[in-house]
Length: 259
Image (cartoon, rainbow, N blue to C red; front, top):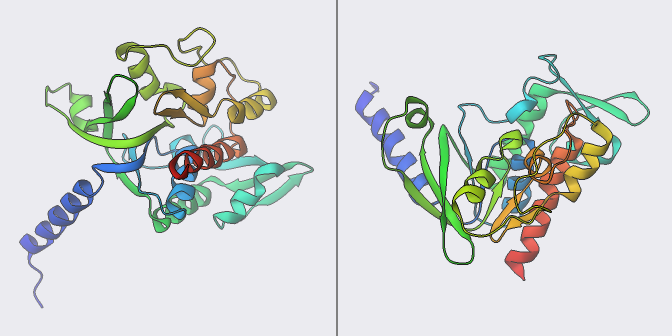
């Protein structure tokens, strides 16, 4: 059989359009494809919920790919080992309480398991705004990342979701939009974004879980976005808290969706 370039193109265009159209209304929309977002997507999809994830970059995985300062190993504390097992990631005990895993293997396993569970991922897409009503966030406003980077004025498209998770890490991209443009205060002590503090790994790992919650009606924060929003410190190349945060936000949302 001689391969036909037009059929190849048509297959890509048709399948992408079907995938995009089928995810214009979802249970949960996740912004940011780092460990917290991927873990959240995995558990929500595994529970049968319709979940979509948007990542502005070409690659999925956030800061985990590079390990610490491009040494592609990460550290995970003992409390998160069961999540590495859940995703089929091999780990090595370094000393009591400290375990390492290959960052490339870890990201690859998180992505594969999440997608196979039913999470739909769109990369190279940016969230430039939220869709709102009087009392809550109800969806996202989307554009191509290349359009955003080039500064071209191209009108966006929208999708609707019962809940949104900001898992964009240090940038808190969705929370910043809501804080700037949506009437009402955030559920922080000042009603504003408190801002990320300097590194304190032990405190940050604990606060990542405590700060994983609903920050505005319809909008949750997870992972480093939770700490940056609530004023917690950064934690460096230890990722147990990030994955546990993804699990926590998924469990919290399952209670809301099934309640």
